[in-house]
Image (tube, rainbow, N blue to C red; front, side, top):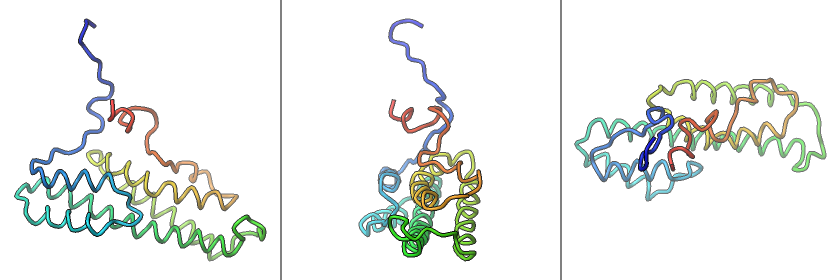
Amino acid sequence: MGLGSRRLYSEDITHKPVIKDPELERAFKDLLAASWDKLPDSLLREVKSALKKSNDEAGKEVVTNVFRAAEAVEEFGDVLMNLKMEFDDTIGMSGENVKPLSDEHANALQTAFTRYSTYLDAFGPDEAFLRKKVETELGAKLIFLKMRCRGLGAEWGKITVLGTSGLAGSYVEQRA
């Protein structure tokens, strides 16, 4: 390798889609940059406006999919936080009333994990960027639930906050 040459690792693994319309691309980037805990009204207006104005059909499809994912994550995140608060009410904030999970709570926990896993598996290889965003947004909430319970199956060990197994395609590499 000579001077001025640069080696790119896993260059073709995780690319964000090409969006031709600048306003649509800005909405896309703003969606990915925002926290999906509670989507700001200004962001919702920006995305809806960009989708209405744009003639870039491929870009519209990408932004629509990201927007749907953001809304789904916001809603599912609320369910997870309500479940965590229910656990906190049952066992106490510091675990002073520790006892086995009720069947109702155990079933709710298993259902949440199953839905999370199913949702992640629904993303195709061209949506790796979106899968990582969903893992980042929901992973922390699931880990909070995991920390409140013991005796969970090994499948709970697969939950990550940053969905990557190494640097290939990670956010670290995207910044390089």
